[in-house]
Image 1 (spheres, rainbow, N blue to C red):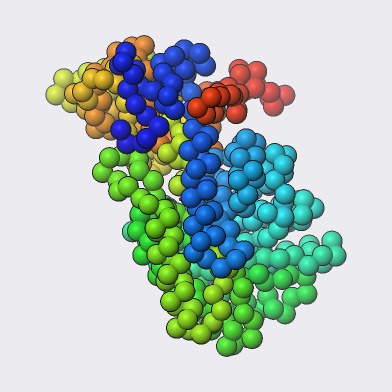
Image 2 (image 1 turned 90 degrees about the vertical axis):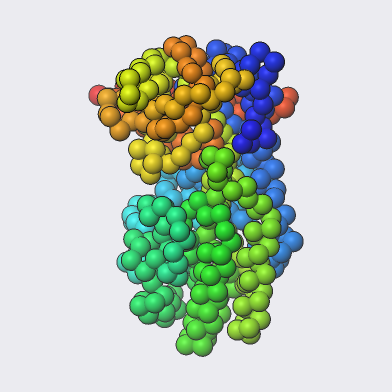
Length: 431
Ligand SMILES: *Cc1c(COP(=O)(O)O)cnc(C)c1O
């Protein structure tokens, strides 16, 4: 199977982390998110070890927590000893409540309000990743009021095309994120920052995009960023000690996606960073990267119950499930590809091509089209694979559908990390 935490039991049911998914669906109800805790920990360790082995001391990966955010994942990340990226006060608050030190958090995003900045400073945020001059002035002013000096990274755009979906490519000059190197604005911003009293510039940040399988876009952006560090040094005397190369390594959603060896990809990036730093005669900076999906995506699956199978002769077969865009909007947003298995009949051949449809009153509410699957009937359990990232975190209550629970599995343990929303939760804020 596509991931090593899946197998088929003698009764034909799909097993995940050694457990019968049909039995789990019965026990917890559907839709249901399942996550493999040990796989998440293993993946974090692969990154952390590679950083220790290949980059200068103090180089630490950060978990881009927008991929999957709840208290339990922050506890796991804190226990494993890596840092955390947040993009909102909601994520920061969850992380802090879970016991993460705000010092180990990096606050991203292209529009932080004054209230966001104040809140984060009060929590003791380690770094803001500043995205614009407007924001830099705001952080400086608020830090001044609070009588502190706030460390920041500056997000710049290296103008790299990572050859991924345009909605998840972020490193180009015309991106909504960051400040462009090419136009001279990034250098101008650094000069401005260096005149401000309540901000300390720790280094530079870039992020080229997501679902990238090759180390090349990272190597290319590393080269551009190191050249920028050198140029800044020549023009201002400021030498950046840290460089964050962003997130974005890919994961396998379907069999045709490549298998990726994260350790060797990180080594390729490190080799490039060392080579270019040497060529430019600058000290090798501490390196950060901020993987999101590659830490959690293939640790998750979603289970649904089939409600109807509708064959339209010579057209399509619709298999409708009891979830959809409310728990996984990624096909609707990006036409993301997924592997789907009839978990009740996982030993049967995928003999039908079906449209897997969600339950919302939207034609676009689909999990996928042209999906090979073993013939399904009402009551069968379907498993959608690789849903550990950008599923629960993107879930909504559209159509007043309650969000599914997240159940974590280890070899010896099984527990609810997030409860199922109730109908009373749905009306909880209504006056
Ligand atoms: C989304 C994002 C990430 C994580 O991307 P993945 O594809 O999940 O690894 C990292 N950094 C920034 C700035 C992002 O916007």
